[in-house]
Length: 174
Image 1 (spheres, rainbow, N blue to C red):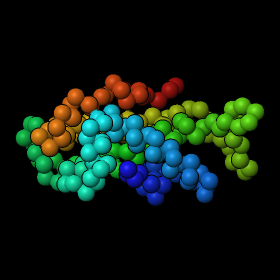
Image 2 (cartoon, rainbow, N blue to C red):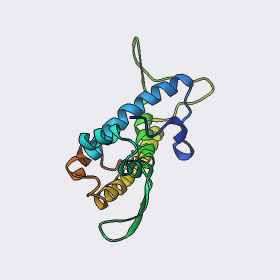
Image 3 (tube, helix red, strand yellow):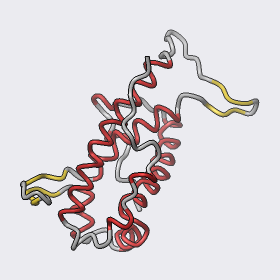
């Protein structure tokens, strides 16, 4: 399955500056994180179904969004799609992942000329803010899937809040 998000999707408050080498690492990182997240949202059966037939209406609506669906409470809602869900998720994970680097002699924290590294507090706060946005969007995803449970059969058997690492909202550290 192709990556739902690419480095071009990270702009504004979720902006990332990636070098050419960083782009390749980032794309591999997205592939792994996307796979894990999708399995914990829709399960292997639906994942395999959509991977085999990526142009089905159900997959396109989940991936790209759907307007005017009625939720379980009878309200008309819009689902903005998996890209909307995944951008803060990937951003939060990338900020945490990218803080330290593995090199031949061990683990290091990169230093750059003419810049000051962000403090642990700033980095963690940035990651936590993105994560909390993701959690809110994950609830929107659940509402969309629940409203369309005849299309996304048995999704509740697979939707695993507890399996998505640290799903509870993170707070800023003091």
